Length: 231
Image (cartoon, rainbow, N blue to C red; front, side, top):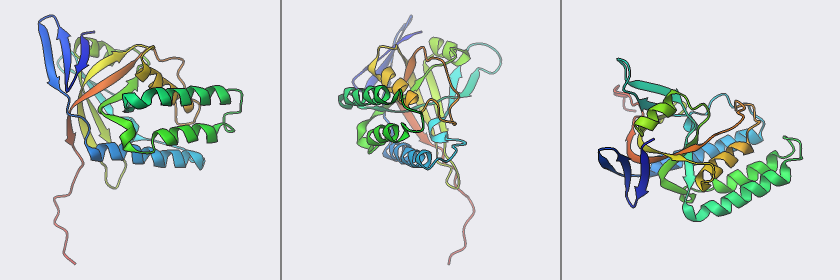
């Protein structure tokens, strides 16, 4: 994979022909609030025992590019969410590890209150998160992974539920995270909090993770062209 590194307000893609620099724009306030408030409602629904059929706020379509074939696109849904600011990360990791250790011998349903308490604290406000990035975990090491090795520029397309259908295109540069990286550990531990809930497909392992450095964001929310009658 081409080496990617963030320096200040830029992300650098180091390739054979030199270094390509792109500006990190960050996530807008409305996107951050949508992510946090939607998760708060998700946690309440889990607490009430509701079945979560779909949670598009966390499952954007990931678009990667390939040099092969007439159609140079690969798409697939990928879990991608917010990542804490560096100054909060170690504290959250400590709380997550302590919670999982304390509850590992308990029946899954009995530990739900403790697990929800930790994640609700983390998602209590948007200020806890780094607006420059999104994060996700790798599972299959398939076509998208191979494409990102050759070209780390990707797009994430989020769409929320009706009736508003909030939608965002987030263009990013992908950095691979090894398992020892604190950001990978946060993504992995928060997944483990709810690994056995009905809305997850159980997975044996996650070999590494990703940071998606945010360079462009476009609001794609649909709107009507019909003029509504005045009242």
